[in-house]
Amino acid sequence: FQLEQALRHGLEHDELLLYYQPRVDIRSGEILSLEALVRWNHPDWGLIEPGRFIPLAESTGLILELGPVVLKAACKQIKAWQASGVPVVPIAVNLSAKELYQDALSAKIEEIMADASVDPQQLEIEITESATMHSVNKAVEILSSLRSLGLALAMDDFGTGHASLSYLNQLPMQTIKIDRSFLVKIDVHTEEPAQQGATIVKAIIGLGLNLGLKIIAEGVETLPQRDFLIEHGCDVAQGHLFSLPLPADKIEPLLRAGS
Ligand code: G
Ligand code: G
Ligand code: MN
Ligand code: NA
Image (cartoon, helix red, strand yellow):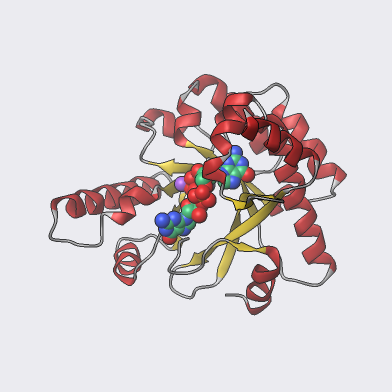
C-alpha cells in the first residue's frame, strides 16, 4: 500500500526514467534499435527495477498512467537526439496486457506521437505473447489499429505464452522475440535442459523465418549462445553480451559510433 502511494507520487513528480538496451546486428554489433526499459528513481530508495513495481502498477491500474509517461519520454528522447544530430534508431516500448485492452488505446498513442511530432516509424510496440493470448480476437483488432497507425509490433517473451500457430498467423506482428529463458539453456550442449533449449530456439527461429517475421533473441550473454544463433539464422539480439540497459547519456555515444 505504501509502495502504491509512493509510485503514484513518483508518477506525478517525474521520478520515472528510461534506460535503453541496444538490439544489435549479431555479426557486426551495429545498433539497429533500442528497447526502452523503465526505471523508478525514488529520492530515498534509489533506482528501482521494473520487476519491483510494474506488477503493482498492473494490479492497481496505475499502469494506465505509467504507459503514457513512458511513451512520452521515449518520444522526447527521440526528438532530443534528433535535435543534437545523434543518428537515432527506432525505440521499442513495452505495453502490458492492461494497457493493450484499455479503451481508445490507438487514439491515445496517436495523440502522444502527434503532440511530440514523432514519426510512427521511429517507434515499436512490444506486447507479450501471453497478453495477446488473453483475448485473441480483441488483440487482433487492437494490434491491427496500432499497425495502421504505422507502428511496428513485436511479440515479447515468445515461447512462454502458448500462442498456437494459427493465432500467430492472425496477429499483425512483424517481429517475435525469443524469451531469454530458452537462451539460458543452450549454453551447455551436453545437459538435457540445454538440449531442450536448443531445440526450442531452433524451432522458433524456423517458425519465424517461415512466417516472414523478424526474430530477436533476448538475454544473449555468451559467445556460444551468439554462435548458435548465427548458425541457425537469427541475426538480431539483445543481451548483456552486447550491452546492459543504459541511461540515455550512455547510449548516445554508442549511437554516434554506430555500435
Ligand atoms: O528490466 P527488467 O528485467 O527488470 O524488466 C522487468 C519487466 O518489466 C520486463 O518484463 C519488461 O518488459 C517490463 N517493463 C520494463 N519497462 C516497461 C514499461 O515501460 N512498460 C511496461 N508495461 N513494462 C515494462
Ligand atoms: O520482458 P522483457 O523482455 O521486456 O524484459 C527485458 C528484460 O531483460 C530487461 O529488463 C533487461 O534488464 C533484461 N535483460 C536484458 N538482457 C539480459 C541478459 O543478457 N541477461 C539477463 N539475465 N537479463 C537481461
Ligand atoms: Mn520487452
Ligand atoms: Na522478454
